[in-house]
Length: 200
Image (tube, rainbow, N blue to C red):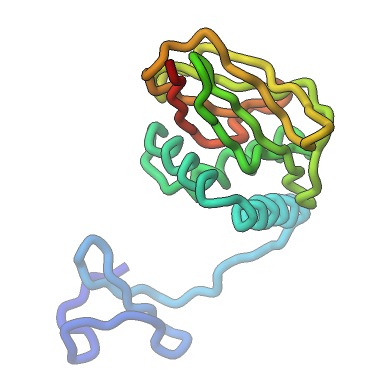
């Protein structure tokens, strides 16, 4: 990559010139390099990973604004700052790598109740977005700060509402609690971080 001054008799140049040169900027420095056709072996492993990514992107498009906001909150506590979308696709793609039939939590709510918070969600497969019923491995991780979710409660399948529910009890009224849905069968979170405030 060569540094250039006033490329192509102008103050700036970007893009491809024929199939020979590519003009770009790098940290504010004008550069030019040889044009090369990117390699794309399109191996079976690449195709599998691309399918995982497309599946997670498709499910992101289906989740509501509250779920997206929760993933945005979760992403703020990652070691490397990222968007809620990137946090979601990172976690869910990793889940698919570990477990081919991985799923995500969707339409999560944390409703205030007397000294408790009622948490509910549905679960949906990442591969084809179909609902997943009767799991026994879903749980709520919760605590009083987003970084300390050391308490857990098991989500129970409710056939009547086709959702998973739990009332997280013995909470302090007026205190903000943070909640995240996890699955003991999956290595990464399946929801972002939600908040709930129990009433007196």
